[in-house]
Length: 333
Length: 181
Ligand SMILES: [Zn+2]
Ligand SMILES: [Zn+2]
Picture 1 (cartoon, helix red, strand yellow):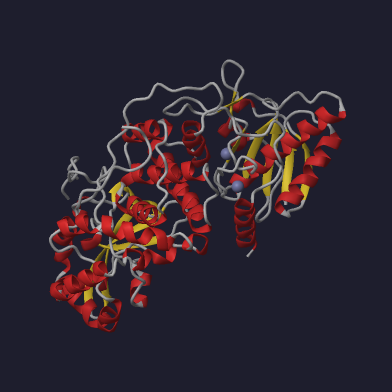
Picture 2: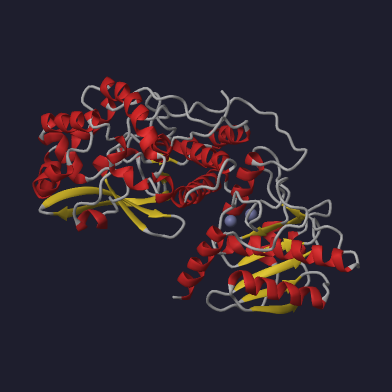
């Protein structure tokens, strides 16, 4: 097995695993949105007549078995637990003065979802800090209150793993930085640069039960989706244009995140927001977006079969998704 | 069941009041399980006490199923220093685990007037709810009126409430139900 090269792709999270063969049993990794896992080995499973190579892991906090297809290790954002020195930088970010929180809930939902998947541990800290400063303006709506809690959970688990302290102590460190006791000030260093977020992944519901069993739901990418990359780029582009023409940002999978409490804000903000986004979207040559759902679903089976034939296509497509994004809200840089 | 083990002498009426308040917060029975000697192995040079070691090493009654043990101590609890320094420790909790400690050292003086005793009891109860909350996997909360708000926060009221906010209470209820099944 080759050693994991220390350098990461420009603008990607620290420790991102680009070569699954570098993973060996005992390695501690972070599976975005899932938590700290320990690699236990490799496995081959047959699904729908196709052999699928899998990385087998155990989630540390509850011992849950986690399986990732080898070909998806990099696209799900699997990465090494952040180093001690990087985590220190995260604390300098947490303790820095907060910028104004993002008030447009659609932008906030989208950016926070992206940060949790691709932003590394700093991205998770950005979500916690951003929602924290938003909570000073008004109580968080239910969905975001839950996201605040689950992001805290992820952040605390990774700090605890990286620094080797109990989770409750890791959380004390977080809040010592975020809301220091009266009279306590810190000598802060410049925090790490936030990860440049890709144009966000399409988020869709699981297609078949087999995928659920693999733990592939909730990660934003699915087997069926890989197939669509290979199957019909033209159809997808059509889908994307249609989507943008309709200004349907909020109509993506994440639309559900717009809770009842916030629905009232939507009409006023939808229009300027829809105008602001396409430039970035169009900069990417052929970004993978959700194909129209009606077209994609009935083909799920065929798509899955094709996925096995063309799993490699995921990587270049992902690279093409990169587009400039404004820096995250949070610390002053 | 929450079993309260004291590692220093406390007034029986104060403990009874604490037991009632914890029952209200979590809907779990409480038991005052007697006084034990603080473990010498947790003592640090300079008179402080390693909070994590204390919780691991202190003697306690045998527990069953989802029982939680809360130690009450008078010690100056120490945490390992973090990247920005050592946060002040009002207690320590095995997040999602079985044991927690709360120290009365940082509480306002108990005094002997009705008001000062009441304020002391409320603050003690608040801290106990906080660290038991961690045992039920609760995280810190941004609401300064909630017991899961950090104990050192400048936003806390002078005599803070001994209760959880709706979000934290519902989460604790879910976790308690889950542990029972
Ligand atoms: Zn706490
Ligand atoms: Zn709360």
